[in-house]
Image (cartoon, rainbow, N blue to C red; front, side, top):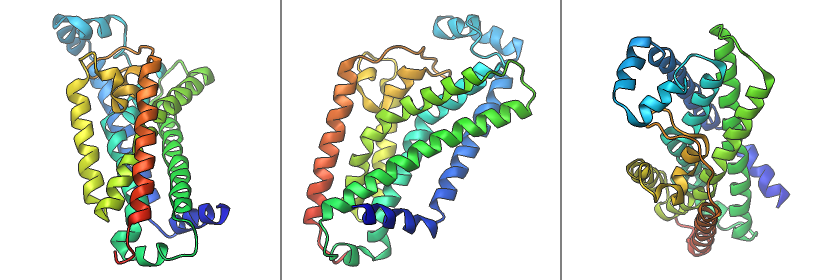
Length: 266
């Protein structure tokens, strides 16, 4: 098993995908940081307050003021929102669909090892990858906020942001075995990416409904909030985690079955 894990990491050394995924984090963090000063304009905030409801509450709470807390919150919310779902979907599609896309599956599937070991190794590498992207997001957001000269820095705020980021990534990771199943089933990247786009769109449609907190892809938004709806942070009930765990179990079972029944001609 350890050799399988090492082999998966070794294959990434010659791949540009880790770099590309890091660049996606960089761009997403930059866009989020660019939006906050615009929303901090008193005129824009006055117009938002006139709309009433949750946006007026967000303005009153100072959620759009250019502060360390708000900059860090934007970074966490970016990681837990739509781009996080799509980025993690892309990473998963690559890890599990690469051999099929590049024609190496016929070698991988004929090795004298249990195919389940391949799945476990890839899932462990996937966990390291997505949580590392979360760490990178916090780092980039902190560096950029400091470079902008925003006052009010505290290590406690950074560590809180890191903890929130890791917590937000956890339910998204639990959904990724299903993405991997689509990658193996479709022998490439198209099916898993279409699936990721589909669940993202469904999640956006459910945000303002009572069912949202039981939709695993939306759980991060309820854990850390979302400034653009806005949704205030709120505790996620045990039932939500049970649903996410069920999605993970179904995804792993489907993935194991698919890899066991995959032929070596792809």
